[in-house]
Length: 318
Ligand code: DGY
Image 1 (spheres, rainbow, N blue to C red):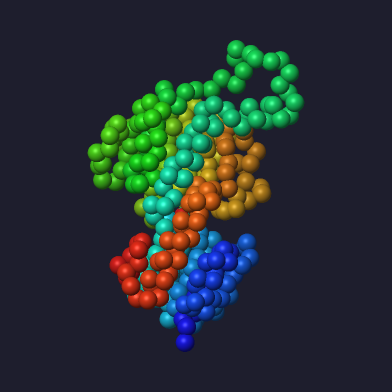
Image 2: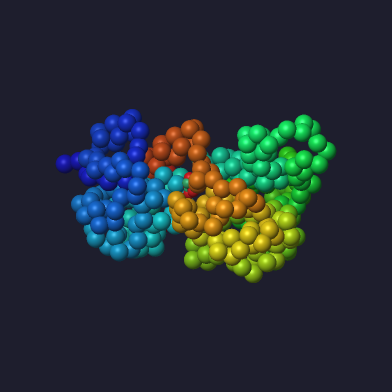
């Protein structure tokens, strides 16, 4: 009998066909996340699950999934999964590191440039028909990324890819990492120095209990007047209320791709601010990268079903 696999995100037909040769699929094809009670019941007799960020897999759900051997998420982040509980239950957890590094780093740079060169304000000015005076010497003056000091929080693969791009811009690059790293053109500093002296602070650490609200009200207060926070990592890294207050006071700018609650609630005060650029969690959203993520996630799933080592596993069970 073929093993059962639950798929909780819409996946391409070709991927479904490939998987259907090896397992019986139970697919949740809606855009909304699968309701937890339904997921819990579907997982009762499943050997594998292919999921993404919108599917929360806490210990309480895993406890009922007695036959589960592999969780494969189409994401590098695994904060939606209780990895410790999975490891304890002998469930391998696969994810998709590496393949989205460049796309995510590109988006961090896109946000830096959008903020420093006031791209959205310019777009709104032109598209609203307000641009009637021609070239003007002081219209929408911004700042140069090439002259900026950029602080990178977290020098994993994505943080390093951001540093590589900033080197080409000629920015001064400072960084903090839990363990010091020797990276060409990057000066390692402590977090206080980073937050107090950077013109841009860009976040590239995983969301864990240790990094929850790493950007606290106090850290935001340390940032220079007029500095910009870039977050393409996870919303939980930032005290969003404190950030909203700092933005509303006009002291800081921000470029955000991720939020405490996703999708961003329609009544979020962030929506009314014009010193922020907001994106809908699209750091890895290029066609090639999403294909590569799906391919790696399916490879992880298949390896887990076959009780082989996963190509990209984030826990000892794999
Ligand atoms: C990830 O992979 O963790 C991203 O946030 C989604 O692409």
